[in-house]
Amino acid sequence: MPTRDAGATLGRCLQASADATSVAEIVVVDNHSSDDSAAIARAAGARLVVAGPERSAQRNVGLAAVTTPYVAFLDADMIAGPGVLDEAAQRLEAGADAVILSEESVGHGYWAAVRREERRTYLGNDDLEACRAFRTPFVRSLGGFDEALSAFEDWDLTVRARTAGARIERTDARALHDEGRLRLRDAVAKKGRYGAWERAYRAKHPGVAARQLSPWRRVRPFVRHAPRLLGRPHLAVGVLVLKALEYAASRRRP
Image (tube, rainbow, N blue to C red):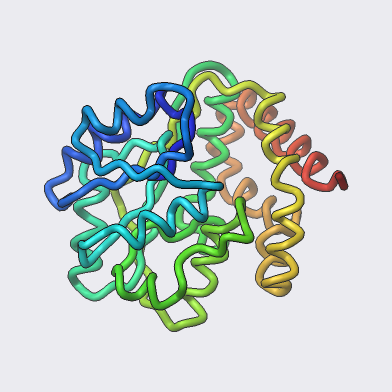
């Protein structure tokens, strides 16, 4: 788990992970937090490593530290739902090289509910979901995460896993992404910050990225889930507003 000032969500993430019977060790790689993240990690019995400068590098530090045959990369605002890590371990034990942890968003307020509806449309979509659990020797053979990417690094690793011929599966159980009380301006600003890394990702994987990031490709999941979304028109409108503003923010040049 890479962390930086993640004290508000880290405790729940650690507790849920510790509850999985397949988890032998938890490594938290903290990027010099100014809050109580390090203390929370220690209190939960996690192995704490202090390192930066950003999450791809932190994940690689954690990857180098683990001694287990399988490894899962969780963010500090994720909650491993009941059975998801155990299911991932079972799939890896049965021969998968990498596993997508199916994700669902939770949180408070209107925009968190909008994000939850958006993320539900991505379930089962190979272009929009990324691997989070791996056979440790396999992910090491790929070189881990690309430290030139601080966003889209999970897609990049998944593309490289597929290119290497990996057997990839996905969990039926879901991991929960804790959005907290999501605000529209924060979501849009975050997407804007990802712009530079999006351009780097496009340069590295032009064909795949063109498909993944095409606005028309992003519309398809919403069309497929239209009956459900239209049953919640106030949220459907929010999804359209959110994605339009995020797309516009990602197109801005620094």
